Length: 64
Figure 1 (cartoon, rainbow, N blue to C red):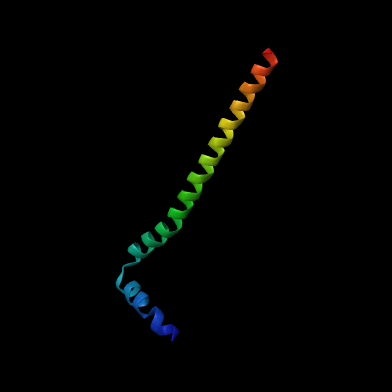
Figure 2 (figure 1 turned 30 degrees about the vertical axis):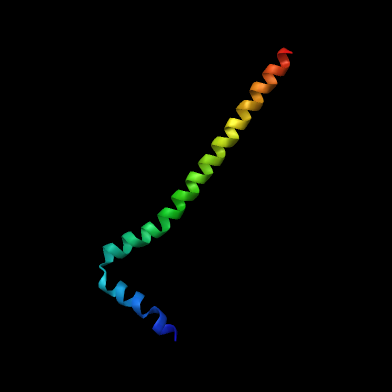
């Protein structure tokens, strides 16, 4: 049963050259890493904006 499920994938991978396989594996790893990196940077950017707003608020309150 198991061998029947993976037969098309095995046949495809046997036809592809090694550089194409490596590029595919790199893409499979790199795409999720890029998405996570973008989300982390966006979250940190929002935190920085919140901190700057809080500092501006503290400055404004000191003036009062």
